[in-house]
Image 1 (cartoon, rainbow, N blue to C red):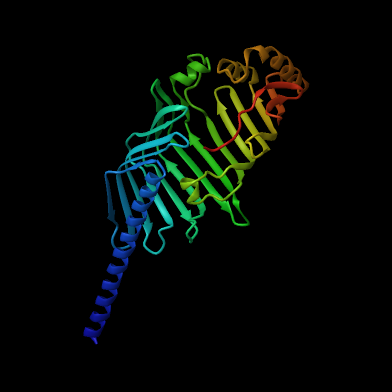
Image 2: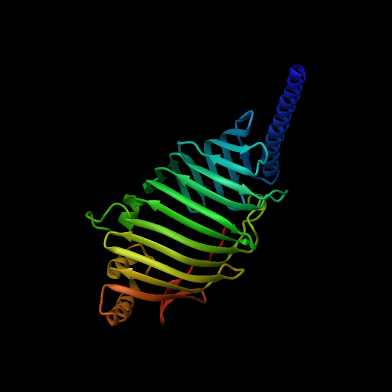
Length: 335
């Protein structure tokens, strides 16, 4: 009896080893094939080493010296290492870990590097060849975004989650929060902030639902990014110094990326926010006086001249406050 049990255990162990080896080899080949396919399309898609670990319960791929560049969008990324880990029963439950070393990004807007501690994303994909995204949750400890001129943005943490709507596969619910979000010296200078202005936001949270024209799946990396068609902002709260902002609303986006809709905005200490918008060229200097007069008239109705409760309209490519055009609205398009 004991001998029979040992034989059964040995057979099971050998089968498990064979299954892990086959799954690990298949995953490695899939990653290598993906890189080869991107190179055939004209991408820069390179790595120095691809190794497999995780026996017996995990499939763990470690990619070293990774470089990707899409010539059609001009977006490029370089990182020293990327770790992909999933349970052996379904590789689509993927955990992605990035190293606590600078990650370099480049695009038509310029170059930047990101340094993050304990940064990890949990990706859940539906079974099937399309690998449609069911959810993704990203968490990072302390992080910093730097540009050639210096640090641009930093925070103590970052939490982002996107969950697919089961009844509408192209719709995703997003949650975002960051603690002690701190603009660097360059953005503070652009906003013309006084030296005594607080370094960090007191609060920053956002909840929204975004409907895309197609679900997010493997084609989003290989061919075309899904484009947003409707953004419903349920909640966006920010507090920085004497300024607090709350926003909600719905914007529809046509096939050309033009937004149409409205956003309700509640602002405490709006004169300072208006100064910041003018200093950063978000609001043209030529329109500042008109905006001050109109916003002041609206705010005075409430009896709190520094508090504001208004509706911003996105209409025909222009952002409007009532009858006053505040300026052109950029197209919303994911490259």
